[in-house]
Length: 86
Image (cartoon, rainbow, N blue to C red; front, side, top):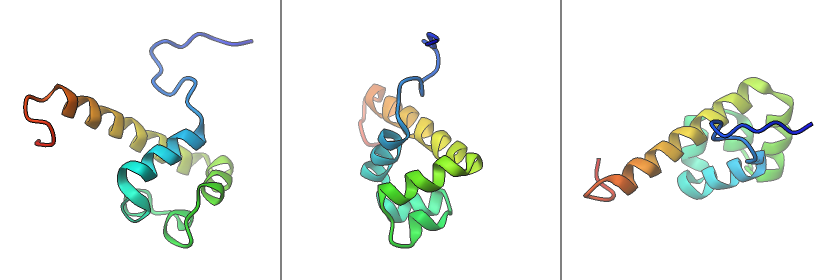
């Protein structure tokens, strides 16, 4: 049974999309600083990251929270009269 979750920004977003967008935004190096897990710092790949994150809820939660922070940052930058400035 599918539940409608209009207020959940992660609803309908796959873990693969989250990891891919974080890598595009931060790069592996910076992502590995924000979330200190081996799969982001040693031979990083989306596939190895997904495997690890699916098995470790604590790490997935950190990645999801970073993704939400990134979305808020992007929204703030869009609404700023001086894009790219904080």
